[in-house]
Image (cartoon, rainbow, N blue to C red; front, side, top):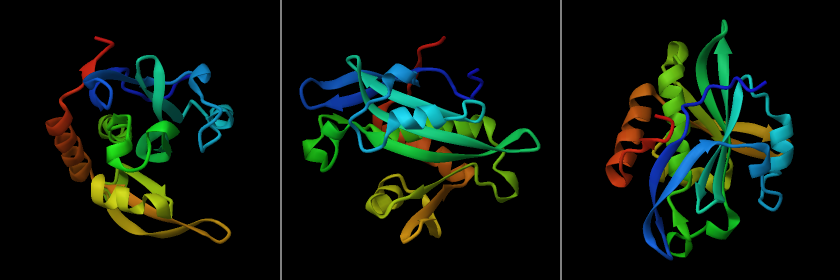
Length: 192
């Protein structure tokens, strides 16, 4: 049974190398959307996802999945308190240096979606931190400099592997969404 917290589907503006400004859709993913040739094993992640408290969302352009995000909602006394971004990946054919990307932004739109879920449903608890993530070293600069999340500190994610914790306060999360919408436009709900 799929009961996860989400905010529906949205049409968003993206920039493609081939056709310039275009429209993509962000929406909850389905099992058949899970790729088998990306860095993460998305098919396995789908099987391990507890849709009572987790979700996988996709960004689709011209019927192709260009990005996926998996997030989980942490509950306190059965009430959503924080949202953790657990996995984020762009289609491998559109990664790397901005000049080489076939479509952009992918990660920012998916983070915008998860942030909207957090702002609408998560209290943030006593620390007013409704959203956080643990980054790999390779994405440290992205979260700190591009997304502008606050770096909290290092955390062991596996023996010999450090991760880096980032967070948004409620105000920082709202500021990120406003900045992103000023640059890329306000998404239009597909569901209304």
